Amino acid sequence: MIYIIYIGKTAGSNNLNKTCESMQLKLKKVNMKLLVLLFSLAIANLLIGCMQTRHITEKYIKTNIEKHNQGEFSTIKTYTIYKGLSYGGSAYLELTGYKYSNTKALVLGADKYFYARQKFKGDQTMIANITYIELNMSQCKDIITNYKILQDRLKSERPKKNEEIYHDFTVSNDLFISFRKSSGYMNVSYIDFWISGEKYRISTATIISKLNKFMAY
Image (cartoon, rainbow, N blue to C red; front, top):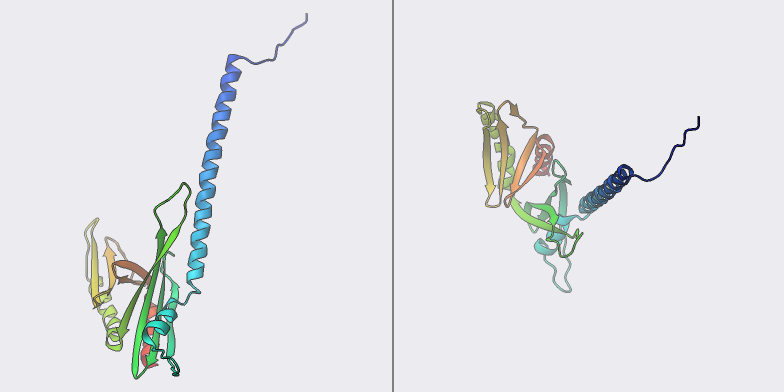
């Protein structure tokens, strides 16, 4: 007895092929979106890396504080206090002290970037927003003196479920420092610098140690 097996396209196989083609198309779209996302992240990391070498406070000090008159000499001393990313990598922060014309003070440069509104499909244009704040020595001392008071006050707080308690100290019109405690969680290892309405988080021990060294400079 001979059996003849017919292999060919059937309605079922056509449906299967269409399903496979549809899945492949969807996968291609997903992969394309993933590539765009990875490219955007790479650009963002590149920009952050560039920010670390831009010396934004140097530019401000040299062009806004130090005076340059034609035919005259000038000199200024700067002191690097802190340069680095905000905790989480979303922004960049610099604190640089200076001595100039019998004045000792500090310049704080805060740098955040964000995507501009798309002008065309796939537009990944990013805009940097830089904020500068000048602090005198009395304001620098206020940070060193009052951060510990904030920590101590926060320790005695007992936040309820879903509640968060903040303790702040206002350093200037454009800057306040802050610690936060939520139910079952308190981390004072990082201090929040709120600069012109934007939050920058850095190591408490690091910044306080560096500020103390600057005060003694």
